[in-house]
Image (tube, rainbow, N blue to C red; front, side, top):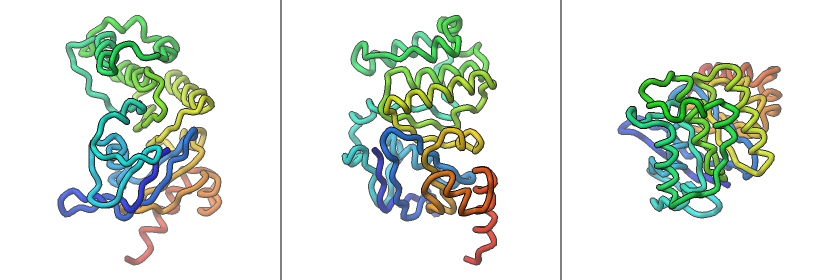
Length: 239
């Protein structure tokens, strides 16, 4: 689904990604993990076409991302903290997004129902709590049945019931063939969901493979402990 070859990116004098090669397979959940400033969000923005690499290329289904926005119709995006126009209602945002997609595309309203959003669709965003905004954020990401979903800290600000509902939705969409690229610091959740893990560290890929293989390599019983051990080992390694 997504391939990246030789990706380099720096912001000013600060390198963020250094020669990254990775593959996100179709119809599975790929988790990108790593410490803060490891390049996770930068890579997500490259896939979305919001950031361009200094070198290398990113392709979706073999097509190079070259500035054309047409491919984005296949993508759903759930940012860590969505910024909605404060004066609009969720219903207005849904209508706006529908218009931008050229009419009335097939919709998936399941999360609107299961996250109990119907009572707040007519409420201005400015008066909604952070948790309610995040539930709306999740529903919008899935709304138009994207082939690829990019989720950045998807359970942030969600209560346990909403978090569980969202994870169930991810599982069911994966069974239907949806591809997921997920970043999160809640590694226990990724251990539940991820088919693949890409561990970014110091701008490069420290590990790419199955979660169980990362745990085996680190000699740990959980994904969280495995990632922590590899980070500690990297800090001890002379540069």
